[in-house]
Length: 571
Ligand code: FES
Ligand code: MG
Image (cartoon, rainbow, N blue to C red):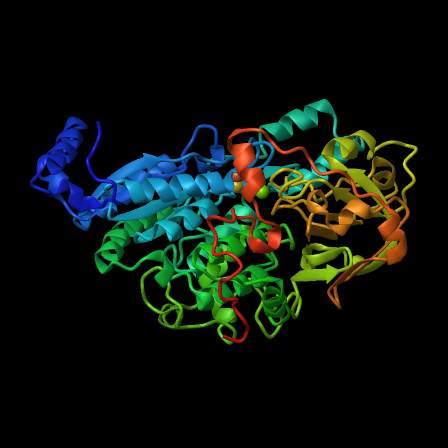
């Protein structure tokens, strides 16, 4: 059915007295909506990342019904629609590779559809950042509701959360878990609907969306399957109508001050390193740039307060018992901008004034933090001229400063082929280096940065080693893992010149990452060759336009670009 207009559309398209309005109403009547319903305003799209190919998001279909209840109660007309959905465990080469495609899907569907505002239903890692990026670019009023964390399982008489997978796979590789144990684990690791039940990327991004005012206060940590999340969904539907009537676009919420708040929350909860990339990409869609220098300064002045898995021992539900994000923000009140808006449309200061946190060992006070500062350290140096990141709070303190000899792997296949080779010349003090796994080389920076510790060293009781790559790691992973080295090897970064035996120095105190090889010798070396240019399709578009991690890995034609104002601290 062709329409005559080319301009972006909104819910008014249903009201017009001309043939277009008639066609809009007639087709909706064909879907079973009444004459009165198709005339209700505003029209609220419910942009859902539900998919059977994405089990973490499998609760979103139910939640959509409760959102609709809220939209309808507030006088609106809710219409649910799908976009692509990215499941962390399944999508190859990585979900980051497709994040920008999903963001484009969201942007174009929100822009092109006859809706006045939108509720974003996301969850599994990349789906929420993609939705926030797309909604910012589309510019229609938008509010998110996330899938929520799944319940904690039990195994061997102890709580079992997704981050346990890494240590359990090491035990399996070391021969400590037999087939029966491994099979029993398969049936327990993921005990129901919802996103990963630790402070991995999904939960981190949910907390940051709440901080940015892009979801309702108190929503991010409510359990996926609980009644409270359903009620929150209804509340979100009501708020979507109110927000849409106010006409406020997402850029009224995502601003320099709320981005600083979000980054400080990220540091305080020791959240996922992936959020560093997503926040920069989200900033870019708001025509802003944060940059590694500002991020480092914020991190060095923010205490680490949450003692929650994967960085600490406590469970996510313990953090929720303390009051969740609002409790974290209460502890950070001296650092955050209270005038930034919460999802209710009020300044955060007012939301926090009426909130009382509960004592919990999962959330320390600013006066008695887990670490006084520097949970996430931005590194720079001769090995990473444009930056790299390490989640220091999740690394063995013995390795916060380290000097060791490189053992280099060229891509994931080489790593898998040789890591357990008994002839590999490696000790606990070696530095494992993986290259060819960056935004271009991966492509899409697969989450392989937490390189496995060789079996031989595992059996000797080695639990952490310095690992360096241009890849990312799962938000559920830990260790002395230096990630997002930029520029990556595939575009000629110094990582492409490293050889086995080179000395590498990492110092999280001074923020340095250096290759201790003289420049004359480096000039003599030939860098590893870049990957071939894909001939067609999305791969070709991606290859031509993907930016490096300090630019948030957004496409150059979608983000603010180098001319955007850089956020400096203090604001
Ligand atoms: Fe989907 Fe972790 S794998 S949220
Ligand atoms: Mg992940």
